[in-house]
Length: 163
Image 1 (cartoon, rainbow, N blue to C red):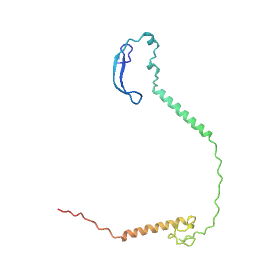
Image 2 (cartoon, rainbow, N blue to C red):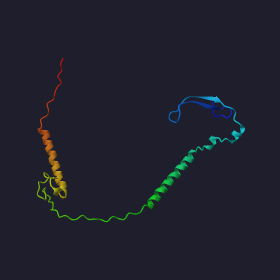
Image 3 (cartoon, rainbow, N blue to C red):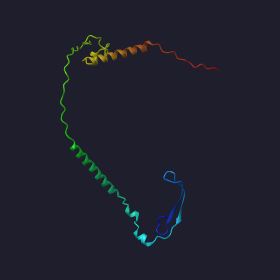
Image 4 (cartoon, rainbow, N blue to C red):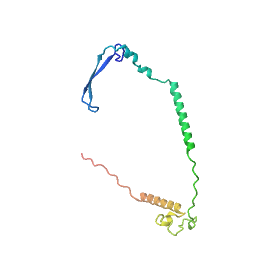
């Protein structure tokens, strides 16, 4: 049944419970016969189906192409509007005189190379900090391996079954 049919259409009737927008509940509905629609109203009526435009596949594809072209143009326009940045001036850090680092594993400040890494303020700016830290980490790793070998294995425990 087409309730919107010009000649045989119906009116939809609802039963409402409550009031307001949040307290309203529709408990039932039914289709009721309606009187014949006068010709002058039918002549003035607009067919909603004729107002809808359902695009073809080609129209949708074309609109997508136009949208992509618009986005590309917008992006290129934005890029052109962006002001050019002035090259940053290079600032040189003040030259600090540090002791030279020899090829031997020695601390240029006289601390124990590797063992004392990170314990003195000079370690933060020392040219030998990287190899010194590496030696310390290597020593810690070797000590941990020796500890694993030296530690006796924990005895395995059995479950006592009472029967």
